[in-house]
Image (cartoon, rainbow, N blue to C red; front, side):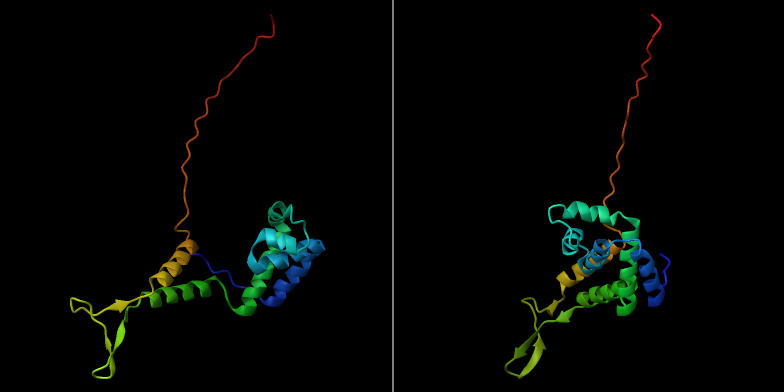
Length: 171
């Protein structure tokens, strides 16, 4: 099980943001602030004032910068501290959604004779139940991604033949 990293107090994070921002120009700071909105590098670069024609390449270059990654992480930590939403919170809610969606709920219909709701039965006399399969599937899919259960592993075997060439320069 992964060790939970405690969230720093917001003031400590804000202090580190000021130190990091001193190393970034205004466009880079704007990119970081835009990036945490939707995590879309190209769109964030455009909104930060970079050229639309080179936005994808610019975003890739910016996201590989250690100072920019640190600044984005700090901004996300501030957001998590303020909203009290972290990975544990999200995973807990996803588990609740999956469990709730998997609960079977009786399919009810109105009995006009007795003037009450009764559980519907099928042709064979069995009670009819329903559950939210789409909600359960989506919650379980997101949990699986969080646990890295769906990463594709590619085994590549590379055989390289090496030839040694010797030349006689003394003829």
